[in-house]
Length: 237
Image 1 (cartoon, rainbow, N blue to C red):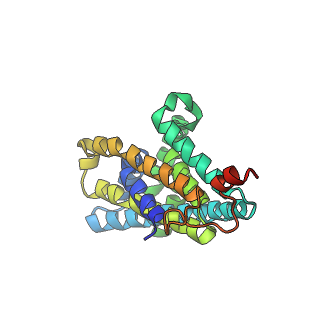
Image 2: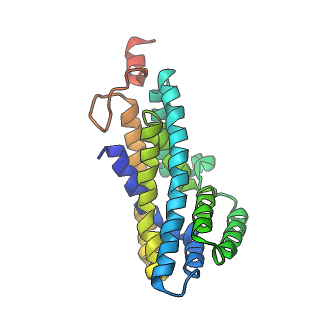
Image 3: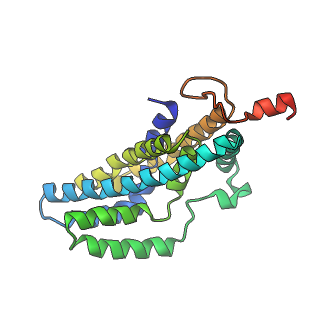
């Protein structure tokens, strides 16, 4: 597995604390579709599938745009710049208030959750899948962060795969919400929140390394059509 794809999965896994806070009420609403564990579990799987499909489509678009940047010879520079912004946002968040993507309009998210929750209670499997897709379109700083990784990929397939691994990484916590409320009431959520920045930092470092074209397989492969920032510095061009 490529280092970036592994990072995408870990990013989703460690960012689950954020997912529980954003999507937890929706998951619990899905649970109300059936009285039994099986019915509720199927609803959650269907919802997560719809949400992940949206992530894959967004990742494909970001990867395609990233390929355009590569052909234009600027993807390496953009990759390094995005990595630096992520690291700077972690080290000195007050210097980059606009980079704190998680501070999205809370009122909009809460209203959307209420509307979706009501629809979940009376929806079919197809309706639950569709509502899961809409859930994937909710403003989410974690998703925006993951999309920066897709932007650094070589084409729409790689971009889609990056977001697929990210989406799968968010599944365990949300499924656990249905099976047990330990992630809601316990200290697991707080522990995930504390270690999540390490995943963010890892992605920032990988974005920088990927943009440097060091020729390291999976981590910093050569991008033939791109102009490496290091080459620019050396040649002065």
